[in-house]
Length: 152
Image 1 (tube, rainbow, N blue to C red):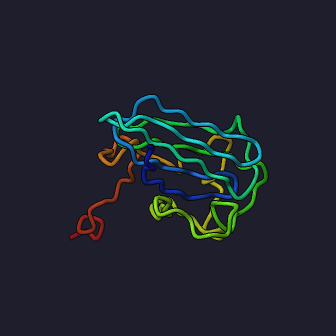
Image 2: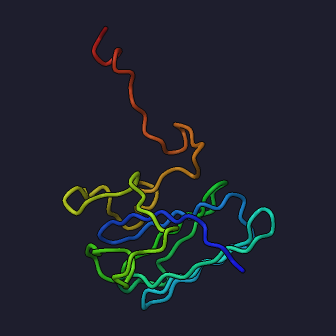
């Protein structure tokens, strides 16, 4: 029997971002289909099987789906077929499974999206950092010391 890893999601007008929390995953398989079907499977550190399938709210560009492996997470960027904001992640109006959660660190409301969030391949600008232990040099924002900024 397979289990489901925790999945965090966020969106922009042209993309959906999924962060799958599964440290040191092996045999990772991700499938995206035009009609909005997303499937994931992998093997965990102790050999346990993880998998889930999602029927996304709208159609996607199958060849516009990208996967990036981190030490602790698997990052998936899914390109929407049509620009626009989805009301929810899934087509079904039922309450989503407990393993699906909003990624508030990457969340952006419609009116907050800036032109810099968009772009032909804006994955790195909006989805920086490989894992929880990223350093400033690996895409984390630099925040200056407030005392120095005030001139004290």
